[in-house]
Image 1: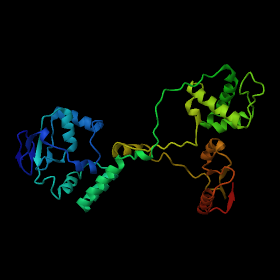
Image 2: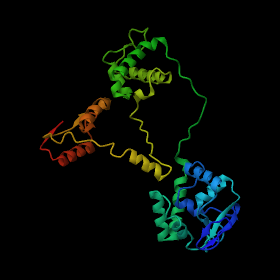
Image 3: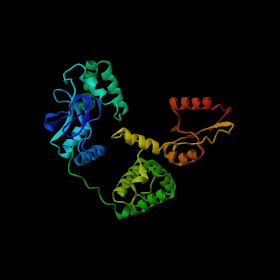
Image 4: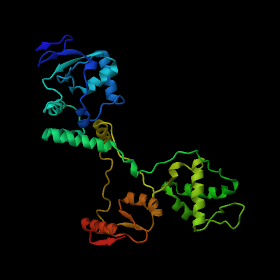
Length: 336
């Protein structure tokens, strides 16, 4: 065992204190592992610790100054304002055949995501071929083909007209519908449309012949008024939804720790006991239109009854799924 000038111990030789400007991060590291970021709270905490206590575990670098172990410590040391850092030089250069494999071996103890583990295994099998694959993958994921994209032009904003007094009776009718069906929020424009037909208001208060009807003109007047009412704060945003414009948001995480914490927090929270297990019949609910989905969903959820929306006539795939559920349920009879 030998001690370096700052007291650190290395069992492979001397620990040298080197200028931080002479040390470079290995490009291969960011291909295999997630890039180090100044916005990462763990890196910020590490920088604060280094500022107080210095670097306790020396960096491991190649003979030409590339980091093999300690990319996060190197980055945090820069954030902490260090001019020099303790390093142990490994007898391998960045251009050597086994450099990438050594990089992986020095990172065995770090917490890794599934993608990072996969990349490590690639480098273990065929370093040259896998490096090319990783590089191509990063380029593909980072690149965007602009040829097929529609460009949105930002222009001067257009102000919608305010809701006039003549529209107030119709707005009040809409708000009554929403209040009466609050347990089924969010409602769609189409659902509000059908509810209004039960007690049709005037579209325009001063026009007695403008009674709300089941036609496109009335529906357009409704959707326009719903839009303006939300923009002006008469109707909460969460009261109305548009199921014809689905939005997909991926459940992403900065690191595996946040994912694990979320999974543990939600563990067993989705459990539902099968309340139909003692029923002699296989029970399902089939709705005719999307507009009734919010009405039947709470009831189906309460009794764990499967439901489908047929929209008049179910397509082949939902019917096939119905048959599969019936066969797997082991019940003798069918009820819907």
